[in-house]
Image (cartoon, rainbow, N blue to C red; front, side, top):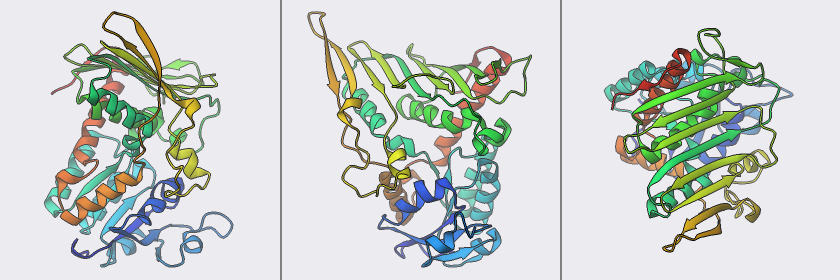
Length: 374
């Protein structure tokens, strides 16, 4: 059994040593006071490529999951491997008595999510999902606009991840099928649907269109096995709100759209993606004063209606960034207290998002609107 959560910092082991581990997890684990990078599992360290033992000589290194999980000093397993491994690896980690943080997409199916949630409860361990884009600065700005009532009652919410990438990715994002947690729906769609879920909860129903823009094909009766690089989903809510989720691989724009939100008092438009990922890839440190900050040229635009019916347009800079560091801070605090309700992204919420994703797939295949149980 791992150390008691009263012993700080908690020993964290990372499974995998690809982009997710090196860019999105290890830099934050090493700067979170309640956490300590204890070990890394990399099956095949490379002499010329990525090598965890070379990059992190001061921690333990493993090439076998069984040996990694058998370490009695390990408290937390962070799973950063491709999504088809998430269920098996998380299951084994929980059975070994470890707390677990799983990269998104959590698992490929609702049934697998339910099984892990049940196992974590039986073992008295916590399982959290890495939905880091809840801490994008533009999304935090949107949350504040809605919480403050700046836009009034929201009637349409449009959220985009659009790119111009004619070449299919050679990573799992382009090689795994949807049944294994691959495709644009699970990769990028998980982020966008999760953000909509955070803001508005479960929709009443879903209508989805999944396509391969690169190949000019549509998922449906004629192409039942198509793996999409494009998503158009509509989430319908009881108060009349419609959320549009949009992902494109063929979008020739110098300023890609991000948000377009319309309400009874105003609207908000935003272009460009959050800066944290490109900053991390470029080597910017997580404690740098500029981390998470955008240039003013990418400020969003607010259009507000006055009491006399006139429109006023103004810049809307992002709120002060909390950055992805906040997810790890909250995760560490939840582990210290061993409280499920304190987790920044409980697995039960990721399970709800998977239900919306599965409804989107069913809708696209059947070409009809799918009702969701509330």
